[in-house]
Image (cartoon, rainbow, N blue to C red; front, side, top):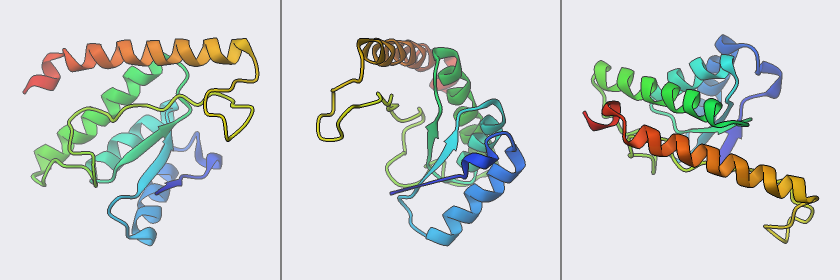
Length: 148
């Protein structure tokens, strides 16, 4: 299950952090994912929410550089959590020290046909994003930060 922080807060890091905490407390579900936009103000909210132990689902990712920034925010959140002393496991099902696999949405023409695209350019864009994100993930997995 997931709940999304209001899109109206996309440029307000402090309000996004408060809303993520409010949604998590109100739902009181251990497996709840909090959806936070991967915008520059969202990066601090991703780090803070991860440090608080909540699993995060990041939205609005459009480039490998943005994915890398989100992965860095996630790692900062985990590092802060470990430094503070609690179990580094973040939420249910996210005990890995790396961001979970991404989902690149595709502008599907039909919800019943998962790989149907409105146009060839939509399909190419989704493929490009998947490749860009995968390259960033491989770089992250090989970094010294991941091996301590």
